[in-house]
Length: 231
Image (cartoon, rainbow, N blue to C red):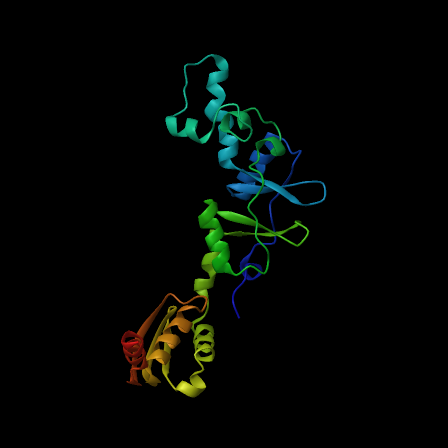
Protein backbone atom coordinates (compact mmCIF):
# COMPACT_ATOMS: atom_id res chain seq x y z
CA UNK A 1 0.00 0.00 0.00
CA UNK A 2 1.35 3.40 -1.00
CA UNK A 3 1.71 6.16 1.58
CA UNK A 4 -0.73 8.98 0.86
CA UNK A 5 -0.97 12.57 1.98
CA UNK A 6 -3.57 11.73 4.63
CA UNK A 7 -1.05 9.40 6.29
CA UNK A 8 1.43 12.21 6.97
CA UNK A 9 -0.52 15.49 6.86
CA UNK A 10 -1.20 17.78 9.81
CA UNK A 11 -4.87 18.19 10.66
CA UNK A 12 -4.36 20.94 13.26
CA UNK A 13 -4.12 23.62 10.58
CA UNK A 14 -3.51 27.30 11.16
CA UNK A 15 -5.70 29.18 8.69
CA UNK A 16 -7.18 32.66 8.37
CA UNK A 17 -10.41 34.10 7.04
CA UNK A 18 -10.10 36.13 3.84
CA UNK A 19 -11.23 39.20 5.80
CA UNK A 20 -8.55 38.77 8.50
CA UNK A 21 -6.42 41.87 9.02
CA UNK A 22 -2.74 42.17 8.15
CA UNK A 23 -1.97 42.18 11.88
CA UNK A 24 -3.97 38.99 12.46
CA UNK A 25 -2.17 37.19 9.65
CA UNK A 26 1.25 38.28 10.91
CA UNK A 27 0.30 37.15 14.41
CA UNK A 28 -0.75 33.72 13.14
CA UNK A 29 2.53 33.21 11.28
CA UNK A 30 4.61 34.20 14.30
CA UNK A 31 2.61 32.39 16.98
CA UNK A 32 2.32 29.14 15.01
CA UNK A 33 5.89 29.25 13.72
CA UNK A 34 4.91 28.78 10.07
CA UNK A 35 5.83 30.67 6.93
CA UNK A 36 2.39 30.55 5.31
CA UNK A 37 -1.27 29.81 6.02
CA UNK A 38 -4.30 28.94 3.88
CA UNK A 39 -6.93 31.64 3.39
CA UNK A 40 -10.56 30.50 3.67
CA UNK A 41 -13.87 31.86 2.45
CA UNK A 42 -17.02 31.81 4.55
CA UNK A 43 -17.66 28.17 3.57
CA UNK A 44 -14.22 26.94 4.73
CA UNK A 45 -13.00 26.58 1.14
CA UNK A 46 -9.39 27.40 0.37
CA UNK A 47 -9.19 30.50 -1.83
CA UNK A 48 -5.49 31.25 -1.49
CA UNK A 49 -2.38 31.16 0.66
CA UNK A 50 -0.74 34.08 2.41
CA UNK A 51 2.95 33.80 3.26
CA UNK A 52 5.74 35.75 4.86
CA UNK A 53 6.80 36.88 1.39
CA UNK A 54 3.34 38.35 0.81
CA UNK A 55 3.54 40.35 4.03
CA UNK A 56 7.11 41.48 3.42
CA UNK A 57 5.97 43.17 0.21
CA UNK A 58 4.56 45.96 2.38
CA UNK A 59 7.97 46.52 3.96
CA UNK A 60 9.80 46.11 0.63
CA UNK A 61 7.80 48.80 -1.16
CA UNK A 62 6.98 50.95 1.85
CA UNK A 63 9.84 53.43 1.52
CA UNK A 64 8.76 54.52 -1.94
CA UNK A 65 5.47 55.79 -0.49
CA UNK A 66 7.39 58.39 1.47
CA UNK A 67 9.26 59.90 -1.45
CA UNK A 68 12.40 57.88 -0.84
CA UNK A 69 14.66 57.04 -3.76
CA UNK A 70 14.26 53.32 -3.06
CA UNK A 71 14.09 51.17 -6.17
CA UNK A 72 13.45 47.45 -5.84
CA UNK A 73 16.19 45.18 -7.22
CA UNK A 74 15.82 44.22 -10.88
CA UNK A 75 14.81 40.67 -9.94
CA UNK A 76 12.01 42.01 -7.75
CA UNK A 77 10.82 44.33 -10.51
CA UNK A 78 10.71 41.45 -12.98
CA UNK A 79 8.89 39.26 -10.49
CA UNK A 80 6.42 41.97 -9.54
CA UNK A 81 5.25 44.13 -12.40
CA UNK A 82 4.41 47.30 -10.50
CA UNK A 83 0.71 48.01 -10.38
CA UNK A 84 -0.51 44.60 -11.56
CA UNK A 85 -2.86 42.60 -9.37
CA UNK A 86 -0.91 40.01 -7.41
CA UNK A 87 2.36 41.94 -7.70
CA UNK A 88 4.50 42.95 -4.74
CA UNK A 89 3.47 46.57 -5.21
CA UNK A 90 -0.21 45.64 -5.24
CA UNK A 91 0.16 43.46 -2.15
CA UNK A 92 1.97 46.27 -0.36
CA UNK A 93 -1.34 48.12 -0.45
CA UNK A 94 -3.24 45.17 1.00
CA UNK A 95 -4.87 45.26 4.42
CA UNK A 96 -6.64 41.89 4.56
CA UNK A 97 -5.65 38.28 3.91
CA UNK A 98 -7.78 38.29 0.76
CA UNK A 99 -5.81 41.25 -0.62
CA UNK A 100 -2.44 39.88 0.46
CA UNK A 101 -2.81 36.24 -0.54
CA UNK A 102 -1.50 34.39 -3.55
CA UNK A 103 -4.45 32.94 -5.44
CA UNK A 104 -5.51 30.44 -6.59
CA UNK A 105 -3.84 28.18 -4.06
CA UNK A 106 -1.97 25.05 -5.08
CA UNK A 107 -3.73 22.27 -3.19
CA UNK A 108 -3.69 18.50 -2.96
CA UNK A 109 -6.12 15.75 -1.92
CA UNK A 110 -5.92 13.34 1.03
CA UNK A 111 -5.56 10.30 -1.24
CA UNK A 112 -2.69 11.77 -3.28
CA UNK A 113 0.46 9.60 -3.06
CA UNK A 114 3.24 11.42 -1.19
CA UNK A 115 5.53 11.16 -4.22
CA UNK A 116 3.05 13.18 -6.28
CA UNK A 117 2.68 15.75 -3.51
CA UNK A 118 6.46 16.14 -3.47
CA UNK A 119 6.43 16.70 -7.22
CA UNK A 120 3.70 19.33 -6.83
CA UNK A 121 5.79 21.22 -4.28
CA UNK A 122 8.79 21.10 -6.54
CA UNK A 123 6.77 22.17 -9.59
CA UNK A 124 5.20 25.17 -7.89
CA UNK A 125 8.16 26.06 -5.67
CA UNK A 126 6.15 25.89 -2.43
CA UNK A 127 6.97 24.45 0.99
CA UNK A 128 3.50 23.19 1.85
CA UNK A 129 0.17 22.31 0.27
CA UNK A 130 -3.28 22.79 1.78
CA UNK A 131 -5.16 19.48 1.69
CA UNK A 132 -8.77 19.79 0.57
CA UNK A 133 -11.71 17.45 0.18
CA UNK A 134 -13.80 17.00 -2.98
CA UNK A 135 -15.65 20.24 -2.24
CA UNK A 136 -12.46 22.27 -1.79
CA UNK A 137 -12.81 22.51 1.98
CA UNK A 138 -9.69 22.46 4.13
CA UNK A 139 -8.99 19.16 5.91
CA UNK A 140 -5.26 19.47 6.59
CA UNK A 141 -1.91 20.68 5.37
CA UNK A 142 1.17 18.80 4.23
CA UNK A 143 4.69 20.21 4.32
CA UNK A 144 8.06 19.13 3.04
CA UNK A 145 8.88 17.98 6.56
CA UNK A 146 5.76 15.80 6.61
CA UNK A 147 6.81 14.11 3.36
CA UNK A 148 10.19 13.23 4.86
CA UNK A 149 8.35 11.16 7.48
CA UNK A 150 8.06 8.27 5.01
CA UNK A 151 11.81 7.75 5.38
CA UNK A 152 11.34 7.13 9.10
CA UNK A 153 9.35 3.95 8.54
CA UNK A 154 10.59 1.02 10.64
CA UNK A 155 12.93 -1.31 8.79
CA UNK A 156 10.67 -4.23 9.68
CA UNK A 157 7.74 -2.61 7.85
CA UNK A 158 9.87 -1.96 4.78
CA UNK A 159 11.26 -5.51 4.91
CA UNK A 160 7.77 -7.02 4.97
CA UNK A 161 6.55 -4.84 2.13
CA UNK A 162 9.59 -5.56 -0.04
CA UNK A 163 9.18 -9.32 0.44
CA UNK A 164 5.51 -9.06 -0.51
CA UNK A 165 6.18 -6.83 -3.53
CA UNK A 166 8.84 -9.10 -5.05
CA UNK A 167 6.87 -12.30 -4.23
CA UNK A 168 9.71 -13.60 -2.13
CA UNK A 169 7.69 -16.65 -1.18
CA UNK A 170 8.53 -17.76 -4.73
CA UNK A 171 11.93 -16.20 -5.38
CA UNK A 172 13.39 -17.12 -1.95
CA UNK A 173 15.87 -14.21 -1.95
CA UNK A 174 17.79 -12.88 1.03
CA UNK A 175 16.33 -9.51 1.97
CA UNK A 176 17.93 -7.24 4.56
CA UNK A 177 16.97 -3.69 5.50
CA UNK A 178 19.11 -1.29 7.52
CA UNK A 179 18.16 2.38 8.01
CA UNK A 180 15.94 2.21 4.95
CA UNK A 181 18.61 0.69 2.71
CA UNK A 182 17.53 -2.60 1.13
CA UNK A 183 19.98 -5.32 0.09
CA UNK A 184 18.80 -8.11 -2.21
CA UNK A 185 20.97 -11.22 -2.47
CA UNK A 186 20.52 -14.62 -4.07
CA UNK A 187 19.97 -16.17 -7.47
CA UNK A 188 16.88 -16.01 -9.67
CA UNK A 189 16.09 -18.02 -12.82
CA UNK A 190 16.04 -15.06 -15.21
CA UNK A 191 17.95 -11.76 -15.45
CA UNK A 192 14.67 -9.91 -16.04
CA UNK A 193 13.38 -11.15 -12.68
CA UNK A 194 16.40 -9.62 -10.93
CA UNK A 195 15.78 -6.28 -12.64
CA UNK A 196 12.10 -6.38 -11.71
CA UNK A 197 12.86 -7.24 -8.07
CA UNK A 198 15.20 -4.25 -7.71
CA UNK A 199 12.72 -1.85 -9.30
CA UNK A 200 9.89 -3.09 -7.11
CA UNK A 201 12.02 -2.66 -3.99
CA UNK A 202 12.99 0.86 -5.06
CA UNK A 203 9.31 1.80 -5.43
CA UNK A 204 8.51 1.08 -1.77
CA UNK A 205 7.87 4.20 0.31
CA UNK A 206 10.67 4.81 2.78
CA UNK A 207 13.36 2.97 0.81
CA UNK A 208 16.50 5.11 0.69
CA UNK A 209 18.47 2.86 -1.70
CA UNK A 210 18.61 -0.71 -3.01
CA UNK A 211 21.88 -2.65 -3.14
CA UNK A 212 21.65 -5.22 -5.91
CA UNK A 213 23.64 -8.40 -5.20
CA UNK A 214 21.50 -10.69 -7.31
CA UNK A 215 22.64 -13.33 -9.74
CA UNK A 216 20.68 -15.23 -12.39
CA UNK A 217 20.86 -18.55 -14.21
CA UNK A 218 19.73 -17.37 -17.64
CA UNK A 219 20.30 -13.95 -19.21
CA UNK A 220 17.00 -13.52 -21.03
CA UNK A 221 17.65 -9.78 -21.36
CA UNK A 222 20.68 -10.26 -23.63
CA UNK A 223 18.90 -13.06 -25.45
CA UNK A 224 15.93 -10.84 -26.22
CA UNK A 225 18.16 -8.00 -27.36
CA UNK A 226 19.96 -10.40 -29.69
CA UNK A 227 16.67 -11.58 -31.17
CA UNK A 228 15.40 -8.05 -31.74
CA UNK A 229 18.74 -6.94 -33.09
CA UNK A 230 18.78 -9.80 -35.54
CA UNK A 231 15.26 -8.96 -36.63
